[in-house]
Image 1 (tube, rainbow, N blue to C red):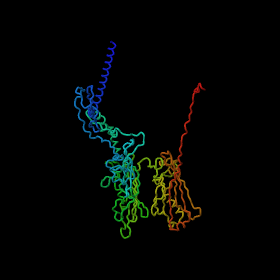
Image 2 (cartoon, helix red, strand yellow):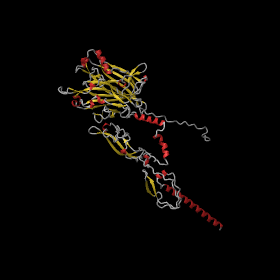
Image 3 (tube, helix red, strand yellow):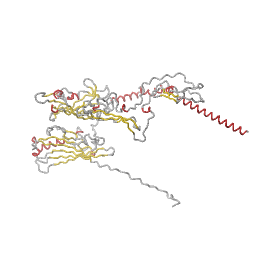
Image 4 (tube, rainbow, N blue to C red):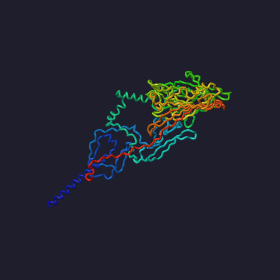
Length: 640
């Protein structure tokens, strides 16, 4: 009987402890649900949350108010408690009612998932970005684009499937460029891609914290050094920032001011879509440009009225030294004016007397054709800047030509070059770093005992005859063109043998025509080779080909430059290196009488050929590893 009574007491004690444990678990669950009931804004305003007293029963139907991204509460069924028990007790709330936070005027917008409205290259407001095909401000400048700087736009390339906007340029039937865009669904083949971004707010910046009475001191101490210049260090930092923003940066448009005080940008006419000139092409800072386009006009009506034909259009303005409104104005200095006849003969004039060289109409009637003198054929700007991004000097050189009505349309060439100002050493511009770049001139000079001496114009040190119509070899003003790396050229002039009698004088004259005034004897092996490293310069080898038979006069008729180059460095990024340069001069193989028997003219030509002598790359594999394992002497004991 006593044993049975003892068992009954143990069973009763076990049931009591079990019920107490369940009651505690219920209390924890109720507390958690009630915390989720309160709005997020209330939690940020007060550090104390009222908690209900423990209850023994769970509510049958629950609702929870969750904050959305805009700060308003949203009711979601099945999560939380609607009515609190009347018997519950709460902790005392802090004294004083917290103030309502002010409206967040500077809140950021919600994340934008439409790729058609995203444009990463649009960095300036209400301004067109060059070659930015997705810029909505580029409605009129699209015809100037040559390529799209951003071809594809996506939200996150790590997603497994997403919309991708593609942009490309196409040519319209009128010959202009237009943007073609499309939005396609793209699948990421990566195995470790993101199937779905379940946290939408992570795709945008976090909403800034709303200042209240509780967190105002913390926010004030965090941002006081940024908004208020209370120390000397912050004022110096702000001054440096102003200097940085005031300077020109790479790609910035060069700002100008005309004679009436109107502000604009420096433009270089260029062809876009068609071969005709478009005058809205901007000149970008530190970007050398050379463009040739066609200009169509009426000689009689447009000679003196069309601004594109006058040199004053390209020099009658000032350039801002910096991008700020308080920057100083730099005038455009005209340093050279060359007059060119209709036959191609050029004559230099004094650039200080510029008034007589405005476009003039000659023989408007009677002679059968009209002539417009002093038409702009070529403009070259040289912009000198400092290492701080400030423009200090701008020069312009013009070639003004005589244009007849049967020569229209004409070709106009515009060029701009940027040179950094240096007080210690002359400027030396590379043609690649380190290897040569296709389209840049070869660097050449004359070797001395100490170093390589470069000419006044290093880019034109190694040049050939420039092609032009009806160019006479003995006219005295032969147009020359620099030798550009990777560009094979053939050009020349015509020689009338009836005008020459002395063979020796003719030979010396033609040598000067073929080689130029100062022909170098060394070429830089790399595009960034400095003149002081003489061992890195390649000598120009000379080879002369003369007639085997006896001729009464051997004159040079052609000059051929053979440039051999190779790929140097890594296969992933090979660099062009010049290994040898050979100069081949060929003389006449027949008598001068036979050469001039047809029409009295003999062609004199110059040519350049670039030969790639790179050895083919061979795949190499490392030797397989060998196993050199040493076992202890008793490893197989006691079997051996």
